[in-house]
Length: 313
Picture (cartoon, rainbow, N blue to C red):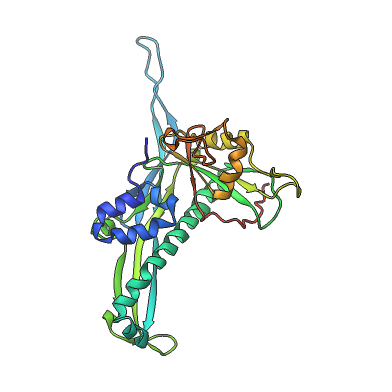
């Protein structure tokens, strides 16, 4: 069962005229492209209830008093962030491109690809991994080669709990990105005193992580071989650690994903044939690994290969 309301699918559906822009944003950001999204409750902010101390119904004997059911709920909120930037072009260069609009359009695909990659990296580290660490769901693979660590993350996407957020007035208005001309398209002097044309782009998105049972990870993965003749790894996560990561996130194939750098996936091939499996559509039993105990694995080059050693108390 696939995840619903992917960022890419939703963005193209809501803003079909910007479909090329959406493709550029997600081209180098596969995790962002697949992230489920829901509209924020109040434009730039999403309000939700944090349910606590839930008391459910219980069996009682005939004619006995029924127990009290209910829960405590605390209102919380998540602010959306502005994703955007400005670009400028000098008057002379603009003329060579046939106008500032042509210049900006020629640069937009590269800018959008980098924007998508930066956004995805922020989600991986500032949201998912940080949340796992805060809630003691980040395991230690044991690596100490500071500046050369990698991570694996596991996220279960549940509507209202763990989800991406967007401003409905933006997407719903047919625009993933708001594009506008600075100074109404007229030339102006920039901070260096040069005459330029300017354009800005921005949108509003966020990530809500409201259930610590849905996110887990493994840090301090070291893929350096133990010696010059060894084809193994010093601190590759064990099968038990990866399975525990999935269990810590209460993972299931319907709405859970494992995220890692392609190098980590390559290294995991030492476990192929046991926990790692090919999907039926993959055909030949080659070196491409797609699932761990049924949980899809999504790789991204937006994971750092130069993480600092995570310190555990």
